[in-house]
Image (cartoon, rainbow, N blue to C red; front, top):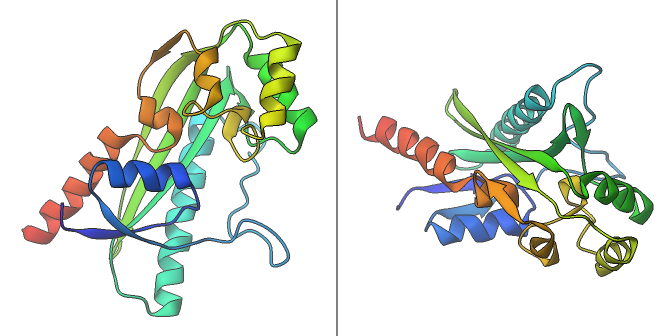
Length: 204
């Protein structure tokens, strides 16, 4: 695929996945931390479902990214944004605040099945397309020693649900129904479908 896009994400995993399917991209970084504050407030709204939450945050990222392109007068190319969340029922497990919070999340996931929702959006020239991938992941029973060891590895931090399937946590997962790349943070099937839609629109 020759079309280039902007990737509005800091995630090394998403960069790796785009390269895997041969998509050329440039980084378009949104603010996530102080001192100037984050561009997008990722706090769930009261009563908001996990599905609505992940789609809303992803779409807000898309609109913010396109606004950034206009403000900076950057060349117009499609922008890809994504957001991933882990949930048990409607309880959203976001990125852990610290090691204690990460351990708490892992205890909840231990021996249970949870959903991983990955939303993607592509925006360009006033057009916006989005999709959500849902995967079911089951964790084995985790001992306190396993939880402590995993948290101490540092892999928990910065990841929804306090784990990354592409790392050591793969050993915790006896079954997965859905998209492995979606659990990593960028569902490749849905991503390519949306990119093809934009490519077709340009060629029409």
